[in-house]
Length: 305
Ligand code: GLU
Image (cartoon, rainbow, N blue to C red):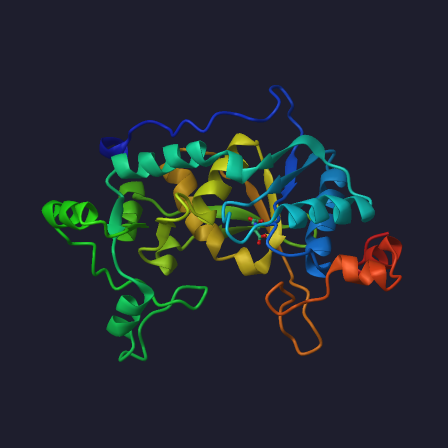
Protein backbone atom coordinates (compact mmCIF):
# COMPACT_ATOMS: atom_id res chain seq x y z
CA UNK A 1 0.00 0.00 0.00
CA UNK A 2 1.15 3.48 -0.73
CA UNK A 3 -0.94 5.50 1.72
CA UNK A 4 1.86 6.62 4.03
CA UNK A 5 3.68 8.16 1.09
CA UNK A 6 0.73 9.78 -0.60
CA UNK A 7 1.06 13.50 -1.09
CA UNK A 8 -2.10 13.69 -3.18
CA UNK A 9 -2.25 13.57 -6.94
CA UNK A 10 0.10 15.81 -8.82
CA UNK A 11 -1.80 18.82 -10.12
CA UNK A 12 -1.32 18.50 -13.83
CA UNK A 13 -4.25 20.74 -14.79
CA UNK A 14 -6.59 19.67 -17.59
CA UNK A 15 -6.00 21.04 -21.06
CA UNK A 16 -8.65 18.88 -22.70
CA UNK A 17 -12.15 20.13 -23.46
CA UNK A 18 -14.51 19.17 -20.63
CA UNK A 19 -17.41 16.80 -21.30
CA UNK A 20 -15.89 15.53 -24.54
CA UNK A 21 -15.91 11.79 -24.14
CA UNK A 22 -14.30 10.96 -27.49
CA UNK A 23 -11.02 9.03 -27.41
CA UNK A 24 -7.94 11.19 -27.92
CA UNK A 25 -4.96 10.17 -30.07
CA UNK A 26 -1.77 12.13 -30.46
CA UNK A 27 1.29 12.41 -32.63
CA UNK A 28 4.19 13.88 -30.66
CA UNK A 29 7.29 14.52 -32.79
CA UNK A 30 10.45 16.27 -31.68
CA UNK A 31 11.55 19.08 -34.03
CA UNK A 32 15.21 18.06 -34.07
CA UNK A 33 15.27 17.05 -37.74
CA UNK A 34 12.94 16.57 -40.69
CA UNK A 35 10.21 13.96 -40.55
CA UNK A 36 10.84 10.77 -42.52
CA UNK A 37 8.57 8.04 -43.74
CA UNK A 38 8.63 6.29 -40.34
CA UNK A 39 7.08 9.40 -38.79
CA UNK A 40 4.53 9.53 -41.60
CA UNK A 41 3.53 5.97 -40.75
CA UNK A 42 3.10 6.77 -37.05
CA UNK A 43 1.14 9.96 -37.72
CA UNK A 44 -1.11 8.21 -40.25
CA UNK A 45 -1.74 5.30 -37.84
CA UNK A 46 -2.85 7.73 -35.15
CA UNK A 47 -4.96 9.76 -37.52
CA UNK A 48 -6.56 6.69 -39.04
CA UNK A 49 -7.34 5.09 -35.68
CA UNK A 50 -8.77 8.36 -34.38
CA UNK A 51 -11.07 8.55 -37.41
CA UNK A 52 -12.19 4.95 -37.11
CA UNK A 53 -12.98 5.34 -33.40
CA UNK A 54 -14.65 8.71 -33.82
CA UNK A 55 -11.84 10.21 -31.77
CA UNK A 56 -9.85 13.43 -31.69
CA UNK A 57 -6.36 13.72 -33.10
CA UNK A 58 -3.90 16.18 -31.58
CA UNK A 59 -0.36 17.18 -32.43
CA UNK A 60 2.19 17.94 -29.73
CA UNK A 61 5.60 19.46 -30.32
CA UNK A 62 8.11 17.75 -27.99
CA UNK A 63 10.84 20.36 -27.90
CA UNK A 64 12.17 20.24 -24.33
CA UNK A 65 15.67 19.81 -25.71
CA UNK A 66 15.93 23.45 -26.71
CA UNK A 67 19.52 23.01 -27.94
CA UNK A 68 18.66 20.42 -30.55
CA UNK A 69 15.16 21.57 -31.53
CA UNK A 70 14.77 24.28 -34.17
CA UNK A 71 11.83 26.46 -35.30
CA UNK A 72 12.44 25.52 -38.93
CA UNK A 73 12.01 21.83 -38.10
CA UNK A 74 8.80 22.64 -36.25
CA UNK A 75 7.50 24.59 -39.24
CA UNK A 76 8.44 21.64 -41.46
CA UNK A 77 6.39 19.28 -39.23
CA UNK A 78 3.25 21.34 -39.87
CA UNK A 79 3.95 21.51 -43.60
CA UNK A 80 4.75 17.80 -43.96
CA UNK A 81 1.67 16.68 -42.02
CA UNK A 82 -0.58 19.03 -44.00
CA UNK A 83 0.98 17.68 -47.19
CA UNK A 84 0.07 14.16 -46.03
CA UNK A 85 -3.52 15.34 -45.67
CA UNK A 86 -3.69 15.33 -41.87
CA UNK A 87 -5.64 17.81 -39.77
CA UNK A 88 -5.48 18.13 -35.98
CA UNK A 89 -7.33 19.85 -33.17
CA UNK A 90 -5.92 23.20 -32.13
CA UNK A 91 -4.20 24.47 -30.09
CA UNK A 92 -0.93 22.62 -30.59
CA UNK A 93 0.97 22.22 -27.33
CA UNK A 94 4.64 23.15 -27.49
CA UNK A 95 6.42 21.55 -24.53
CA UNK A 96 9.09 24.25 -24.24
CA UNK A 97 6.31 26.59 -23.06
CA UNK A 98 5.33 24.30 -20.19
CA UNK A 99 8.46 23.74 -18.13
CA UNK A 100 6.63 24.89 -14.98
CA UNK A 101 4.13 22.03 -15.30
CA UNK A 102 6.97 19.50 -15.51
CA UNK A 103 8.72 21.18 -12.58
CA UNK A 104 5.64 20.49 -10.44
CA UNK A 105 5.80 16.84 -11.34
CA UNK A 106 9.50 16.72 -10.47
CA UNK A 107 8.77 18.41 -7.13
CA UNK A 108 6.08 15.84 -6.44
CA UNK A 109 8.63 13.07 -6.77
CA UNK A 110 11.02 15.00 -4.55
CA UNK A 111 8.35 15.37 -1.89
CA UNK A 112 7.91 11.62 -1.98
CA UNK A 113 11.66 11.27 -1.42
CA UNK A 114 12.12 9.52 -4.72
CA UNK A 115 14.73 11.69 -6.43
CA UNK A 116 18.35 12.20 -5.52
CA UNK A 117 21.03 14.43 -7.03
CA UNK A 118 23.69 12.63 -9.01
CA UNK A 119 27.01 14.30 -9.71
CA UNK A 120 28.51 11.54 -11.87
CA UNK A 121 29.62 12.27 -15.41
CA UNK A 122 29.30 9.63 -18.11
CA UNK A 123 32.99 8.99 -17.64
CA UNK A 124 32.56 8.43 -13.89
CA UNK A 125 29.88 5.84 -14.64
CA UNK A 126 31.86 4.10 -17.34
CA UNK A 127 34.85 3.86 -14.99
CA UNK A 128 32.72 1.86 -12.59
CA UNK A 129 31.14 -0.43 -15.16
CA UNK A 130 33.82 -0.89 -17.85
CA UNK A 131 35.55 -3.85 -16.29
CA UNK A 132 32.29 -5.66 -15.86
CA UNK A 133 31.21 -7.12 -19.20
CA UNK A 134 28.08 -8.50 -17.62
CA UNK A 135 27.04 -5.14 -16.15
CA UNK A 136 23.25 -4.87 -16.59
CA UNK A 137 22.02 -2.49 -19.28
CA UNK A 138 18.78 -0.58 -19.71
CA UNK A 139 16.49 -1.23 -22.72
CA UNK A 140 18.28 1.52 -24.68
CA UNK A 141 21.62 -0.22 -24.13
CA UNK A 142 23.06 2.18 -21.57
CA UNK A 143 24.63 0.78 -18.38
CA UNK A 144 22.32 0.80 -15.38
CA UNK A 145 23.42 3.46 -12.95
CA UNK A 146 25.73 1.87 -10.35
CA UNK A 147 24.19 3.91 -7.53
CA UNK A 148 27.30 5.89 -6.61
CA UNK A 149 25.45 9.05 -5.52
CA UNK A 150 22.43 7.32 -4.01
CA UNK A 151 23.94 7.12 -0.57
CA UNK A 152 25.63 10.51 -0.29
CA UNK A 153 24.75 12.24 2.96
CA UNK A 154 22.62 15.38 2.93
CA UNK A 155 25.70 17.36 4.03
CA UNK A 156 27.77 16.01 1.17
CA UNK A 157 25.02 16.78 -1.35
CA UNK A 158 24.69 20.32 0.00
CA UNK A 159 28.44 20.78 -0.06
CA UNK A 160 28.76 19.70 -3.67
CA UNK A 161 25.84 21.83 -4.82
CA UNK A 162 27.24 24.85 -2.94
CA UNK A 163 30.60 24.31 -4.61
CA UNK A 164 28.89 24.67 -7.99
CA UNK A 165 28.82 21.00 -9.06
CA UNK A 166 25.88 20.32 -11.34
CA UNK A 167 23.54 17.52 -10.45
CA UNK A 168 21.11 15.47 -12.49
CA UNK A 169 18.09 14.10 -10.65
CA UNK A 170 17.75 10.34 -10.63
CA UNK A 171 14.82 8.26 -9.46
CA UNK A 172 15.46 5.83 -6.65
CA UNK A 173 13.85 2.97 -8.52
CA UNK A 174 13.74 0.43 -5.71
CA UNK A 175 12.01 2.97 -3.44
CA UNK A 176 9.59 4.04 -6.14
CA UNK A 177 8.58 0.48 -6.94
CA UNK A 178 8.30 -0.19 -3.20
CA UNK A 179 6.03 2.82 -2.65
CA UNK A 180 3.66 1.62 -5.35
CA UNK A 181 3.69 -1.82 -3.79
CA UNK A 182 1.72 -3.54 -6.53
CA UNK A 183 2.34 -4.93 -9.98
CA UNK A 184 1.69 -2.51 -12.80
CA UNK A 185 0.62 -3.14 -16.35
CA UNK A 186 -1.17 -1.66 -19.32
CA UNK A 187 -3.64 -2.68 -22.02
CA UNK A 188 -1.84 -3.16 -25.33
CA UNK A 189 -3.79 -3.28 -28.57
CA UNK A 190 -2.64 -5.63 -31.29
CA UNK A 191 -3.14 -4.91 -34.97
CA UNK A 192 -6.89 -5.42 -34.68
CA UNK A 193 -9.25 -5.09 -31.73
CA UNK A 194 -7.42 -7.69 -29.63
CA UNK A 195 -6.08 -6.38 -26.33
CA UNK A 196 -3.39 -7.95 -24.15
CA UNK A 197 -2.42 -7.04 -20.61
CA UNK A 198 1.28 -6.25 -20.48
CA UNK A 199 3.21 -6.49 -17.24
CA UNK A 200 5.25 -3.31 -16.64
CA UNK A 201 8.88 -3.68 -15.59
CA UNK A 202 10.09 -0.20 -14.62
CA UNK A 203 13.12 -1.67 -12.83
CA UNK A 204 14.62 -2.38 -16.24
CA UNK A 205 15.57 1.32 -16.25
CA UNK A 206 17.32 1.35 -12.88
CA UNK A 207 17.90 4.75 -11.28
CA UNK A 208 17.46 6.66 -14.54
CA UNK A 209 17.74 10.43 -14.91
CA UNK A 210 14.42 12.31 -14.76
CA UNK A 211 15.75 15.88 -14.86
CA UNK A 212 19.06 17.35 -15.95
CA UNK A 213 20.98 20.46 -15.23
CA UNK A 214 20.41 21.85 -18.73
CA UNK A 215 16.87 20.48 -19.18
CA UNK A 216 14.87 20.63 -15.93
CA UNK A 217 12.68 17.72 -17.03
CA UNK A 218 13.00 14.64 -19.23
CA UNK A 219 11.06 13.01 -22.04
CA UNK A 220 9.58 10.60 -19.49
CA UNK A 221 8.23 13.28 -17.15
CA UNK A 222 6.87 15.61 -19.80
CA UNK A 223 5.25 12.91 -21.93
CA UNK A 224 3.39 11.47 -18.94
CA UNK A 225 2.25 14.89 -17.70
CA UNK A 226 1.08 16.03 -21.13
CA UNK A 227 -0.66 12.83 -22.08
CA UNK A 228 -2.69 13.18 -18.89
CA UNK A 229 -3.52 16.85 -19.09
CA UNK A 230 -4.38 16.63 -22.77
CA UNK A 231 -6.70 13.73 -21.94
CA UNK A 232 -4.91 11.30 -24.27
CA UNK A 233 -6.69 7.95 -24.04
CA UNK A 234 -4.83 6.04 -26.76
CA UNK A 235 -1.08 6.20 -27.23
CA UNK A 236 -0.01 4.89 -30.61
CA UNK A 237 3.73 4.97 -31.18
CA UNK A 238 6.60 2.82 -32.41
CA UNK A 239 7.86 -0.36 -30.78
CA UNK A 240 11.11 1.48 -29.97
CA UNK A 241 9.18 3.08 -27.08
CA UNK A 242 7.61 -0.16 -25.81
CA UNK A 243 9.97 -0.51 -22.84
CA UNK A 244 9.68 3.18 -21.96
CA UNK A 245 6.01 2.50 -21.29
CA UNK A 246 6.99 0.49 -18.19
CA UNK A 247 8.58 3.61 -16.75
CA UNK A 248 5.66 5.78 -17.87
CA UNK A 249 3.24 3.48 -16.06
CA UNK A 250 5.27 3.85 -12.86
CA UNK A 251 5.23 7.64 -13.17
CA UNK A 252 1.51 7.69 -13.94
CA UNK A 253 0.92 5.68 -10.79
CA UNK A 254 3.15 7.91 -8.67
CA UNK A 255 1.32 10.98 -10.02
CA UNK A 256 -2.08 9.32 -9.63
CA UNK A 257 -2.88 9.69 -13.33
CA UNK A 258 -5.07 7.42 -15.47
CA UNK A 259 -3.69 4.53 -17.52
CA UNK A 260 -4.05 5.08 -21.27
CA UNK A 261 -4.45 2.28 -23.81
CA UNK A 262 -1.34 1.66 -25.87
CA UNK A 263 -0.50 0.36 -29.28
CA UNK A 264 3.18 0.03 -30.18
CA UNK A 265 3.37 -0.40 -33.92
CA UNK A 266 6.10 -2.05 -36.00
CA UNK A 267 8.98 0.16 -37.08
CA UNK A 268 9.83 0.82 -40.66
CA UNK A 269 13.28 -0.46 -41.54
CA UNK A 270 15.74 0.24 -44.31
CA UNK A 271 16.81 -2.58 -46.67
CA UNK A 272 19.62 -3.53 -44.26
CA UNK A 273 17.08 -4.04 -41.48
CA UNK A 274 18.05 -0.92 -39.54
CA UNK A 275 15.29 1.14 -37.99
CA UNK A 276 14.69 4.36 -39.91
CA UNK A 277 15.78 7.34 -37.89
CA UNK A 278 17.02 10.88 -38.14
CA UNK A 279 20.42 9.75 -36.95
CA UNK A 280 20.78 7.15 -39.73
CA UNK A 281 19.84 9.89 -42.19
CA UNK A 282 16.60 8.34 -43.40
CA UNK A 283 15.34 10.28 -46.39
CA UNK A 284 13.05 13.07 -45.26
CA UNK A 285 9.49 13.52 -46.48
CA UNK A 286 10.49 16.85 -47.99
CA UNK A 287 13.33 15.23 -49.94
CA UNK A 288 10.87 12.66 -51.30
CA UNK A 289 8.49 15.49 -52.17
CA UNK A 290 11.26 17.31 -54.05
CA UNK A 291 11.92 14.14 -56.02
CA UNK A 292 8.32 14.24 -57.19
CA UNK A 293 6.87 11.60 -54.83
CA UNK A 294 3.26 12.53 -54.01
CA UNK A 295 1.49 12.30 -50.67
CA UNK A 296 -0.77 9.71 -52.28
CA UNK A 297 2.31 7.59 -53.16
CA UNK A 298 3.49 7.76 -49.55
CA UNK A 299 0.08 6.88 -48.12
CA UNK A 300 -0.28 3.96 -50.53
CA UNK A 301 3.21 2.65 -49.81
CA UNK A 302 2.39 2.71 -46.10
CA UNK A 303 -0.92 0.93 -46.57
CA UNK A 304 -3.30 3.87 -46.17
CA UNK A 305 -5.75 4.80 -48.89
N1 GLU B 1 8.83 12.78 -29.12
C1 GLU B 1 9.12 11.40 -29.30
C2 GLU B 1 9.88 11.19 -30.58
O1 GLU B 1 9.86 12.06 -31.45
C3 GLU B 1 7.87 10.53 -29.37
C4 GLU B 1 7.20 10.45 -28.07
C5 GLU B 1 6.01 9.52 -27.94
O2 GLU B 1 5.32 9.23 -28.93
O3 GLU B 1 5.75 9.14 -26.81
O4 GLU B 1 10.47 10.15 -30.74
